[in-house]
Length: 81
Image (cartoon, rainbow, N blue to C red):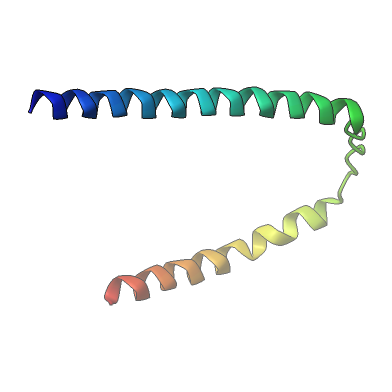
């Protein structure tokens, strides 16, 4: 029984060690690839935000009440079943 327990512990240590080493290498490889991509293809500068008219901003808010009503009805219908 003692031999079986030591084999189980041995297998657990090697398995966890292998997973730890693999994940550590994966983290380093991901970091290296990220730095390489940043050098090869740098991000483009973000476009400046355009100002929107007040009417365009207020339009979605008026439909929000209807959306809330539809979602509430769907939740009530779901809870019935």
